[in-house]
Amino acid sequence: MNMSYKSGLRTALLMLFALTLTACGEQEEAPVKLDPVAFHEADECHVCGMIIADFPGPKGQAVERNEVKKFCSTAEMLSWWLQPENRILDARLYVHDMGQSQWDQPDDGHLIDARKAWYVSGTPLKGAMGASLASFADQAAAEALAAEHNGTVLHFDEIDQEFLQQAAAAQHGDMHDMIQQGDMHDMGDMMQGDLQ
Image 1 (cartoon, rainbow, N blue to C red):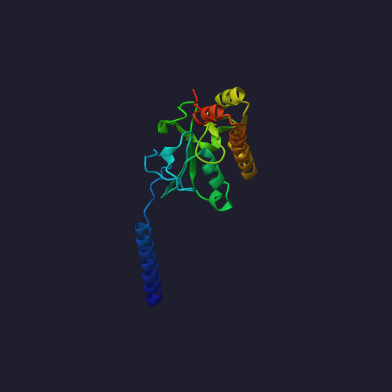
Image 2: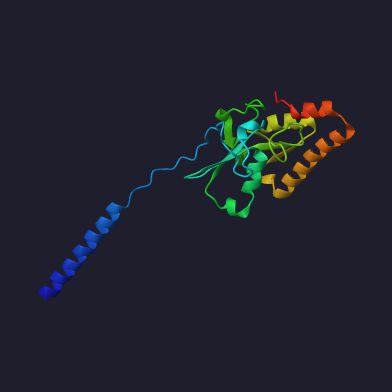
């Protein structure tokens, strides 16, 4: 009985020692910051590869644990995010608050949570590709821009791929109509649109 007691005690001590070593080997993970980052002159759009700084209007970014994906427009970011394989990512989405920024050079100090933002479509303001969606932290600011240009205000949760395709088609249709009518002055104004 004494041998069995010693053997059991030895086994228990070895198991305790092994558990202690295992616990020591595990490191506590530091909390991961998924804060927005600045855009740089050489940054390329994750979707189209174009140089982001070459275009006016609000930009977007998806910040993950080990990677930041940057986009030349809010529409490009939203279109990317709406893909099923991207929606499962642990990413934070950010866009410029155009209520705090100039259209031609959005201020990276005013990047906001894209999921809480309001978006305005249907304005003559130009961005990079597809529909130009002005993003705002404040719903009233978004509604003011929409009223000025007879645009549409949507919250993040209301935007889907169908809406993005319709908005892009409408925007390209407006430009096509101006070219057909020979109204280059209006087209120039559209291209130079400036948000005050």
